[in-house]
Image 1 (tube, rainbow, N blue to C red):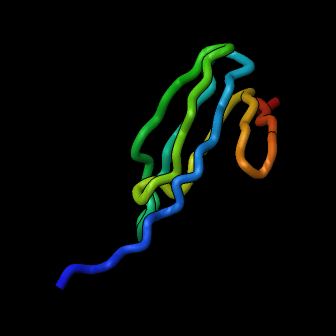
Image 2: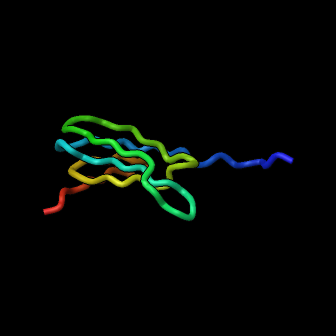
Length: 79
């Protein structure tokens, strides 16, 4: 018997680095949350990321602009 699965949400976010060295880290779903992918962005670079059946969260470290379907937010660097 095949399981009938509903499609997972496939929301996208756009991340634009305001400074060099912005880290974008994908976190897994499941009982143990783990890092599964990371990227480093330099100033002006843009990454389009998608939430999938494997990605439940995205961590952004550094100065960046994040655009989602819910609005826009700026991340900040630690001072």
